[in-house]
Image 1: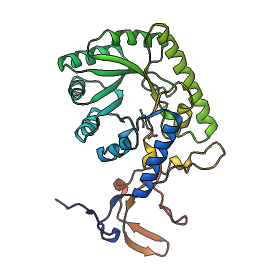
Image 2 (image 1 turned 120 degrees about the vertical axis):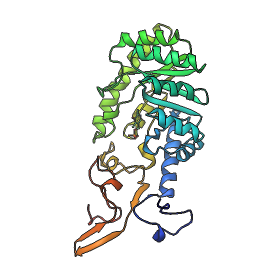
Image 3 (image 1 turned 180 degrees about the horizontal axis):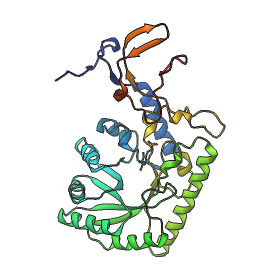
Image 4 (image 1 turned 90 degrees about the vertical axis):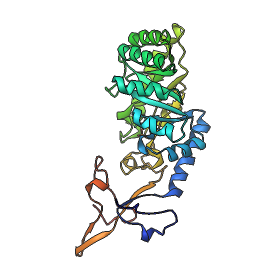
Amino acid sequence: MSSAPASVGMPLQDVDTPALLIDLDALELNLARMARFTEQAGIALRPHAKSHKCPALALMQIAAGAVGVCCQKVSEAEAMVAGGVRNVFVSNEIIGDSKIDRLAELARSAHLSVCVDDPANIVALGKAAQRHAASLDVLIEIDVGSNRCGVRNTDAVLEMARLISRTAGLNFSGLQAYFGTAQHMRSFEERRQAIDRAISRCREVSALLSRHDFQCRTITGGGTGTFPLEAASGIYTEVQPGSYLFMDADYKRNRCADGSSFTEFRNSLFVWTTIMSHPAPAVAVVDAGIKAVSTDSGMPEIPGDRRAHV
Ligand SMILES: *Cc1c(COP(=O)(O)O)cnc(C)c1O
C-alpha cells in the first residue's frame, strides 16, 4: 500500500506527484458566483455531483444554498447519502432489479427522486418502493433535443403521469428536461436557439399535464453551458449545473453573448506533476501519464504558460 501523496498543511513542494489539487480560492469563488446567480434569478440550484462525486463538496454546495444534488447512478447516490446529503435526484433512468431495489431502500433514509421514460420501469419502481415502505418522487424525462433518453411523444407523458400518480409509493413531481448536447455548443446564439426549443417543449408538455390536473412542481435541466437561459425561461424551476465548480478547459472554449470567452468561473482543479526528464531544450517529460488526466476533450492545458503545450 502506498501512502497518500499529501496531508493537510503540507507545503506544495512536498506533495508527491502526480496529485489532484483543488485551488480552494477559485472553487469558493465559483461556488459563491453560482449561488448568488440562482438566488437572484429566483430559481432552485441542484448541482450535478458527477463532476466531483465527493460528499464534502456537495455539502459545501448545499451550505451555499443548493437544494440538494443530482447523481447519475445509484452507487453515487448511496455515497452522497452516506456522506450526509439528505436530498438526491438521480437524474437518469434506473433499470435492473438490484439497482431499483437499492434505490428504494435508500429512499428510506433520504429524500430521493428519479427519472423515468418508460411505463414498465414505473411499475418496477412502484413495487420496490412498496416493498421497502419507501416514497420516491418521480420526474418524467422528456427529450428536449439531445435524442437520447426521454419521452418523445407528448401524449405518452400524460399516460405516464397517470400511471405514476396511481402507483403507491411513487409521487409525480414534474419533468426532467436537460439538453446535454447544447452545453458545449460554442456560440451563444446556437445555445440560445437550442434552449428556446427546450423551453417550448416544456411549455407544451406542462400545459397538457395541467389541463389534466397534473401540476409539475419541478421542471429541471440546464448545465454550466446554458443555465442562465433556463433560469430566465419562466418555466424551469431548477437548474443542475455541475462543471462550474471546477470549470474545465473545454468549457472555456464556449463563447459568451458578446463573443468573449467564458471566464465567469475559474479553473479550480489541477493535476500537480513533476518534470522527470528534460532531454532537449524544448522537451520536458512529466510524471502524469495519460491515466492521470482526462483526454476526452483533448489534451490538458498547462496553466499560466501560453508557450508550453502538451
Ligand atoms: C452532466 C449533467 C449535468 C451538468 O452538466 P455540466 O455541463 O457538468 O454543468 C446536469 N444534468 C445532467 C442530467 C447531466 O448529465
